[in-house]
Image (tube, rainbow, N blue to C red):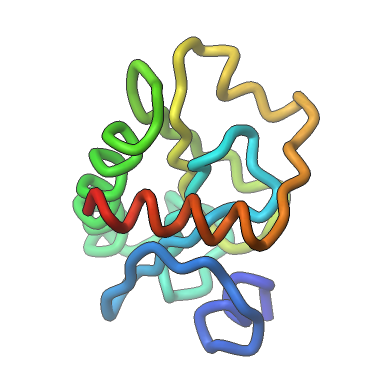
Length: 129
């Protein structure tokens, strides 16, 4: 069982941004930048292209209003999207406020942020949904 499955089931806490019957979105607790959100299908599949078509297409539709809220919430040129899938064996999409391609460089050190900072970030994004 992946850490994301434990978040989906409520076994582990998260800073949830949005949820429906197929997907959940929550803040990355080790973000590249503030506003870094993970979009995760509720079906536990390791590789994104192994998802059934319904989930693959639905993931972008679910992410769209969240990406627009991120762009309204942070000083950025756009919301970048990345799918890497190495760190957790449960497919997921990263939504990251970016100003350059380097802002999606996952080899950079991650931010260390408090639960309070994450909660403020969560509320900022939700207020723009």
